Every structure is written in structure tokens, then in C-alpha cells.
Length: 139
Image (cartoon, rainbow, N blue to C red):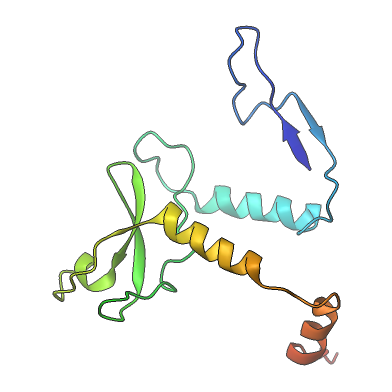
């Protein structure tokens, strides 16, 4: 589904919570409507107190996966000054002397997305994954 927000009577962009219309997308859905609704329920259930005036939780999809190029430890997401960053775990916990500077989350996440988008998959990739990485459940 694709939301169209348009502008209000003053010519200002409408808020994300109030779309003017919602249209079906032209691409196949990544998740089913039921899975999407359940994910929204879980997000609401696990949302913590509002920080820095934001009404949504900060997301760090590379937290724990991203590796520091200087010392090799995992990097974790953190917000500082209203911006999202990835920091070396040893610097966050004050347990090491890594010299790696913080990495802007948007930059690192865009690089990962660009890398994934550059991967060329065979047309039958979904079938191959199912056949090679999943075993049927026995009842």
C-alpha cells in the first residue's frame, strides 16, 4: 500500500498519520497485511517512553552486526544530539581504547542497502532458498 499525504488547507504537508488517500502498490507485497498488522502491534507494545520529542522508537538495524574496522568489536546504535550513530562497543562501555570515530547511521545503513541492491539474484532465488535452507515440518 502506498500512502499519499498531499497538503492541508494552508498548503503545508500533511502529517504522516493522516494520509489523504491510500493506493495499492504496483509491486508485490513484501509482507502480508496480517503480518504487517501484527508487527505494528508489537512495535506499539515494545515502545518505550518518548525521548527527544520523538513519538517513534529509534531503530538500529545494524546494531551488533556492524564490525569496527579498527578493533574488530561489534558496533551498537546510539542517539547523540538527536542524531543516530553507530559506536564501537568498547567506547560505549569505556572498556577499551579504540580510535574508531562514530559512524552516522544513515551513511552506514545506505551503504548496506546499496550493497544488497547490487546483488544479482537468479529469477528462481526464492525456490532455491526454500529447497536448500528449509526442511519441511513433520506433524
